[in-house]
Amino acid sequence: TGVFEGPEKTLEIVFRREGGGDLCPEEGEDPDRREGLRRLSRSDLDYVCARVRCTILSQMSNRYLDAYVLSESSLFVYPHMLILKTCGTTTLLRCLADLIELGRRLGLELDWVGYSRKNFTFPGEQAYPHQSFHQELEYLYSHRNLCERLDGNGYTLGPVTSDHWFVFVADQTVRAKSKAFLDNDRVLNLMMFDIDEDVASTFYYDAYERRVREDETEEEAARRISSEQTRAAGIDALCPGAIVDPRAFEPCGYSMNAILFRSYYAMHVTPEAGSSYASFETNQRMTSYGSLIANVVRTFKPRRFVMTLMADELGLHELRENPLSGTARSAQIVVPPKPMVGGRVLGDSPRSPEGASKKGDVYRRTNLASIQVEDDCCLMMGTWVLHEEVDSDLPGRRPRGMSVS
Image 1 (spheres, rainbow, N blue to C red):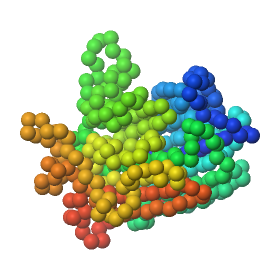
Image 2 (tube, rainbow, N blue to C red):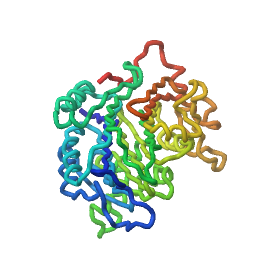
Image 3 (spheres, rainbow, N blue to C red):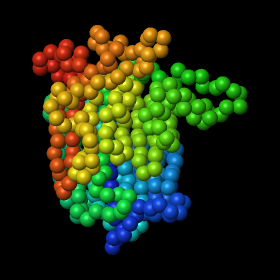
Image 4 (cartoon, helix red, strand yellow):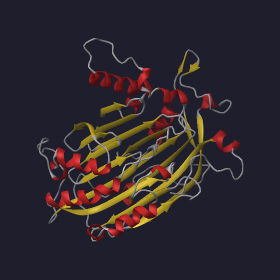
């Protein structure tokens, strides 16, 4: 169709050891020892990905987790937890029963399941069971072997005529306890729409020299171009100190995983005109995400972005500042310009309102929704729009690409 569904579906599944006990490596343990879900074989993971309709392209690890770049986004595997993000027309929920069975074979019991996605831009392109949130819930509840383990509920955050977020949470109430993993987890996600055209052009494969040496293979060229795109867009600066695994796609598109100790970062870019999109997600436990949010938004210069935060109640209390709270005026996000060089602002956006290049682009929050679900899981979602877009929007005008599916 010439368009691509950028916003990802996300599945997070958490296990505990049968009978209790830690699944998290502590300081001083053998970093090469594999426990819990990290004992899954490559063939097991390939089978799970095949159910979803994607493939593993590359992998990296540290002592705490394994990170896989997929043909359709990312997979992160901890001893006790698996996070699978897929975009496009993937069939993410079809792997859930398989993951539960694979965990059972490893002596693990289901502890928590979360499934979430933004409303689709192109819902008619989706395959069963993802053609609507109602269908997704029916799929979960229609499988007896899932229902016996997934006594969960579905939620919708945000206005149904604009950006909104669907979430399903099943909490089995008994949480794995460890010094490393307290009930203070949080995951921040930025979904950016209509990114700057110059930025989008960075992620076209043919914009880079395919071969610079006669002895460079296609795979070597792909790795080089992936690194060049990462540096050209400034993505490497968004997660300093992390190990980065980037992947450029032909003819266009980009994915990146990064890991830093127990934290992951995931970034995906769909640069096509008419459906340009970029996402950034991390579970790093920061007390303030303000600088990170500004840096990410400045990198892509979207016309609007949707921010979601899923956090344990304790994790939410640890935040010194939270843009997903307070009044709309206080929730404005000012994105500072890049440094001045020779009297000129580098990377100045032509979309910025008159005079904004010196002070930075201003994004205004246009809606906010939050709810506490199950035991202590807090869900928050808001939409920010570049303020010239808010000011010029006509009353009753429906934002481009909105759907309720």
